Length: 94
Image (cartoon, rainbow, N blue to C red):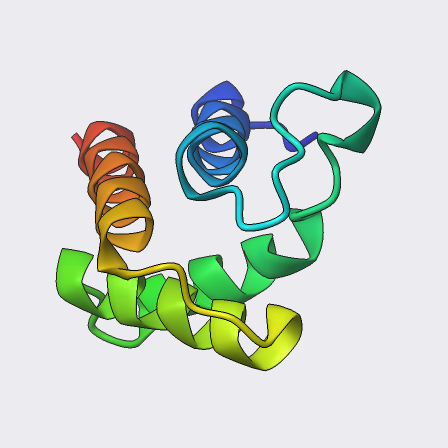
């Protein structure tokens, strides 16, 4: 947890987008596994420092699926998760 509750909420919003929308491992229904995608938070946050866009976030999620899970389920889940993450980012910087 940081000293900025808005930053904490932003990170939680990203986490929820990964779990509830992206979820390539199918862990959403198992609360004990909700930290499963936390390793990707830093990668996603770093993306915001490098001229991020909703499209780049979707590409990043698709690349993670391919590299880490050796699969790509199609673009829809990655695009929807990227949209949710981008909305969280816009709320955070507002």
